[in-house]
Image 1 (spheres, rainbow over the protein chains, first blue to last red):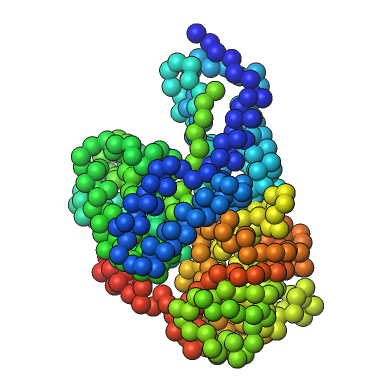
Image 2 (image 1 turned 180 degrees about the vertical axis):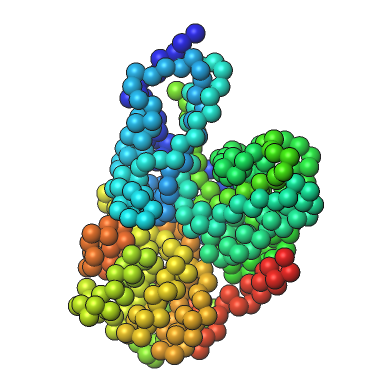
Amino acid sequence: MARRIKTKDVVGKVASLCRKACIVIRPDVKKAFEAAIKREKSATGRSIIRKLLDNAALAKRSGVAICQDTGMTVIFATLGQDVTFDGGLEKAINDGVKKGYKEAYLRKSVVADPILRGNTGTNTPAVIHYDVVPGDRFEITVFPKGFGSENKSALVMLNPTAPFEKIVDTVVKPILQAGPNACPPFFVGVGLGGTADMAATLAKKALAEPLTKKTKGKHLARLEADILKKANSSEIGPMGFGGTQTVLAVKAKAYPTHIAGLPVAVNISCHALRSARGKL
Amino acid sequence: MKRIELPLTKETIASLKAGDEVALYGKMYTARDQAHQALVADIEARKELPVDLDHITFYYAGPTDTPPGAAVGSIGPTTSSRMDAFSPILLKHGHRGMIGKGERSPEVVDTIVKYGGVYFSALGGAGALLSQSVKAVKIVGYPHLGTEAIRELDVEGFPCVVAIDSRGNNLFAKTLKKAKKMLAAM
């Protein structure tokens, strides 16, 4: 049963999600900060997390972005096979990002070429991932990714026989290397399996989902717990000033992979983990 | 919280100790990746600089656009380590105060000690809170750089922490010791 969606509505929806993502703290992130304050043994660490909550409250009240790095815009679109559009979908999504970043006074942080640079002035193009599903759903998650943390991403192609502890260390290493530079406390996305590019996308996707979403598989839940424990034993703490809350959550996603491989991708999010979801 | 006037003086810098929580009052200048690269290129080409480097304080920041009614948009610090390649040359030419977030390289620490500089860490990701202490903004250099242009900020009570003082004491040396040990063992 075909359902036709107006691209004008896609533009409006994406624009409002851009604003929401950058200005309104995610409820699961807010809860994570509140829980972290209770667990943090360092007084400096607790003070920092309290200030982050103050910052979030001020951002929501005043309409000023939580962080000035309103990121390169990543979009996850769930596209039902029975949906049609009255125009170009990709253009509509990008027009929505352009509109949102203009109207909400967000920063234009995208350059046209990685070598030649040159700010595009619109924060487009966005990085768009499409999941095509049966039916007539159309859902969009806008995920602005700041580059202080994105610059600390890692991809390691482990041997298929790599022991569990080696997988843990493979994820913990880039977290420790990031240290204060990516604004801890962190939320860490881990993508395992598929191909190199699939693993990296999974790591990003893991961060776009609610922190409370149940992880598929006891072994992955154990992996998350071991990574969290080891990373926090570093005592890097909030902003690298020492403390027990360096990582607040680790979310792992896996995909079938090749007999010769075990791709492991790590996507670190700073404390300003931001996304907003909507549907048409 | 120590009240510190900008521009920094030799005496003020000498009085600051790693760990001091300060509130800055006066003029600081935004400059991040592109502006640092441009300043160093202009120095090497013996061109006139858009700002006087003598005792200048640079804030590594690229703000969002300014919403109506506000003096400036969201304006938290960017990662300082990306400026490590450029800070030593600028320190040599008179620059003294640096505000950013995260670690600095051993070369930057050595140059801070050599010339009597100071590095402050501001709260990363607190762009809304930090915008409150900025009372006026104007572009003074490299306007074509957009968000990365050099902006003169008039600040009142801009909160930050002395992360590296002029004697080379480094807050991160203690806090990151265990992490560096863990990395060496991996």
